[in-house]
Length: 72
Image (cartoon, rainbow, N blue to C red; front, side, top):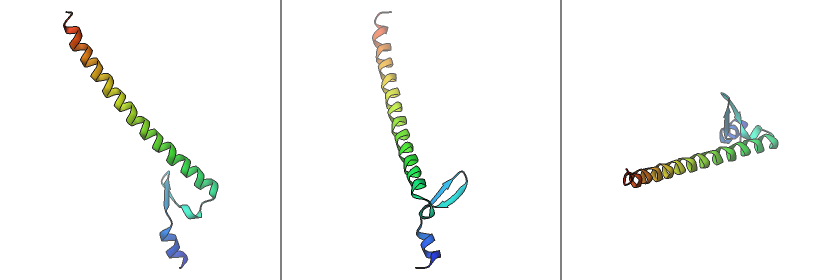
């Protein structure tokens, strides 16, 4: 396999507008990339959790509003 063919199979990292071939990066750099990917996944998961909590809170507020109308 030629170097050009090998480079086509290497995943690319785009960071701050620049592209890097992942296979050419050091192991420490690859570990940082993995850490960032995990952090992004966790952030998305917690953002989804916050959205669900917000929907639940709004539903509880709506139910309370209906119940309190009985006391007006």
